[in-house]
Length: 223
Image (cartoon, rainbow, N blue to C red):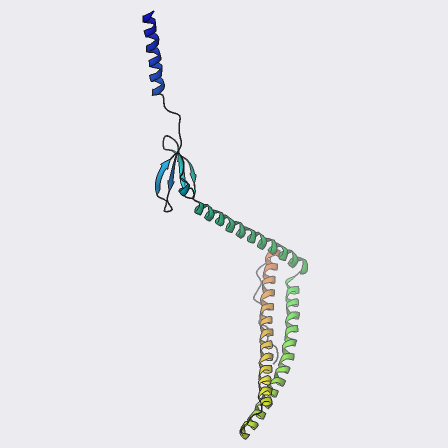
């Protein structure tokens, strides 16, 4: 009987030793970094003061199972994604607008001649405005000259009245105002020519035709 008990005791002891020899269940290890990216500690959890920093979770064999970026990096990645989305949205809008313009272009014109004719009509309208403004400019320049003569006359007498000074200033300002309007209309002509040149080139491209020859230089409006 005692021998049997000894055998049972030995078996129990062996089982206990075997259980101790078995590998422990795998446990995770978390390593955290400082803001420079240097690992400064490892444990079973990230300390509260480092939870905003980058960390890595490793298994018992030291293999990385998960990486958590820092709050700063997460914010940077989020902003980067936002910018990419904004750029894509802008590009989508640009493409949609180009399609709209292309559709309007081919629905408005049937030939490049129609584009040229419309351009010339618009330029002629601006030329008429410029001619009218040049007539106004001559009147303004004459009025300015008259006021300068009047001013000089009073100046020779030794005193120029305030109203004479004011009239001269107004005449000078009016002449400059008309000159500026003429300059604006000249710029309008350049914009019109450039706009129709783009439309014509795009129309030819959409129709699959040959590239258009440069438009002949249009004579300036008669001064």
